[in-house]
Length: 346
Image (tube, rainbow, N blue to C red; front, side, top):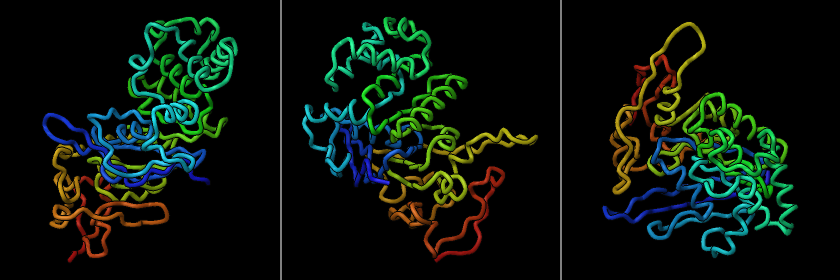
C-alpha cells in the first residue's frame, strides 16, 4: 500500500492562564490509501487534537505546534498558508465532526451547505453543484433527497444530520476521511446504520478513514489498524487482531476489560480503570499510566519506555515488554480480575 498520510513526532501545546498544556506528545503514525485506522483512548488523551492539527483547525494562539511533521501525499501540511490549506480541506481531506447540530449552519438549508463545498473546490455551476448535492443526499441514505435539499438542520433527525455531515465530507471525493466520534450522540440503532453507511462508502470509493472513537466494538467492526492514545501519547499500535488478541500495554488491557460481555449465560462484572488521567500541565517523566497501573515498577515512574516491537507493525510503550520484567499472564481477560505476576524481574 502507498502512504497517504504520515505524521512524525507531532507535538502540540496550548497556552492557558494556568500554564502550557502538552496536549500531544511525540505522536507518529501513518495511514495507507484505502485503509481504516482507529484512534482510541479516554477523553483528553489527545485524539481530537491530533486530527484537528492534521486539518489545520488548531487556533494559534492559544495552540502551538512545537514540532513534528504532517505529510499528505508527500506534501508537508504544517506551515501551509490558509489559502493552500483550503485547497486540501474538503477536496483532499474531509472531516465528520462529533456533533452535527453545532457543525451545521442553522440558517442555511442542508442542500446548500453540501453544494457550497462542491462550488468551492470544483469548477461547476450552481445548478451542477445542486444536482451533485442531491446525489450525495441520496448516497448517504436520506429519503426524498430533492425535498430534503431545501430543509434546515432542525428539520432533520439526529441520524439524518450525521448523514448530512457525511455527505458534506464526501461531496468532493476526498482521499482521506476523518471521523471524530461520528456516532457518539446517536442511539444504538442509528449508530449501526451510520457505521454501515461509512463502511459501504469506504468500499465503493476506496477512501481512507481515520476513525476516532471510545467504542472498541466499533473498532473491531470497522478498522484494520488501531492506535491507543493516553496522556497525549501513543502507548500501543497494531492491527485489530494484535490489539484484541495480544494486547501488550496495561492501559489497553483496561480498555478491553471495560467491554461488557453479552455472550453466554454468565454475567461478568466490568473492571473499571481506577484513578484519573495525568496532569498535562506537568506530564510525568515516566510512563503516564504508571499511577493507575497495578503492575507499575520503579522504572515506570522514573523513565518513559521506548516503543517495544512485539511483532510486525505491533508496538507498545511499556516496560513489561522488556525481557527483564515480570511476566503477566491473562491480565487482559475479563475473568482475570486478580491477575498474577509470574516470575521475577531485575
